Length: 281
Image 1 (cartoon, helix red, strand yellow):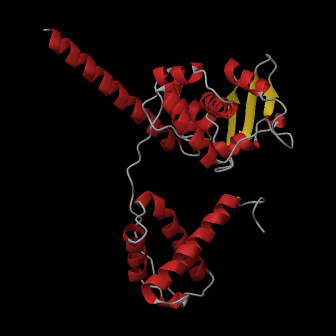
Image 2 (image 1 turned 120 degrees about the vertical axis):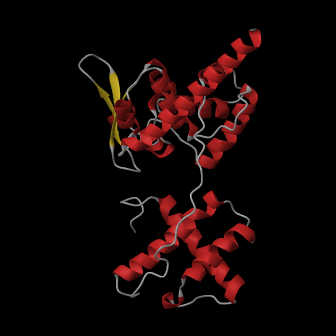
Image 3 (image 1 turned 135 degrees about the vertical axis):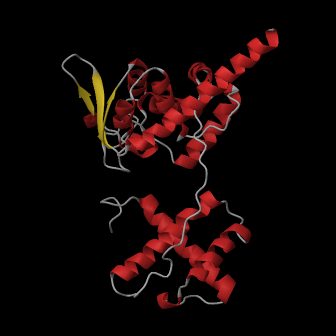
């Protein structure tokens, strides 16, 4: 009942998927369809984790969400006095090192200028490019309406939108390329929305084909455009505070991750330059 009000359908589906995994695990491990909450122990969580990694052969990043949602349920039971203690208190979710991939300038120019054979690929590329220039995520892009476009006194156009994920206000200036993309797809979105945005799985399939056809030499995902936006902006002297506001980050420490990516890139390029001059001696 809360879907579409203060919860997304995606969150609802994640809970359903978690429930399905718990049901299958109980059948596999105990030959039961259900057990009382009071029977839960830390060993249950350990065995559940082992089941994901060995029986289902899922990566840590793929099953962490299910463990988090299960723990949310026990904490809710504790809050409602259904449980007297949290059976998973002290359980640590395994952290996975995240490689924040981004497109460099050469790769982005290849993508921007590519002649793609189908409308679907062109449409996906244009949505990706729009997001690189604005830093907007897929969900916010799908919800973008004409009401979110504000014209300032100097004639410049800006996007004013609250991020679906954090509710943080984003104010983003629209440059020439994203304005042309809006004009190109005008009227395609439903209910006043600017764009028709396919599901993430369909976008990723199209981006895989685009990456191959453009010879980008990398695995292209739709979320990558936010990293690309931040890295390109940082490389061109935009301040951390401005990027944080444009991306809708509630904590600037999240934005600083991209600075580390840039520092690493600079170090690699300087190292390569040093090696080049060293070989000429």
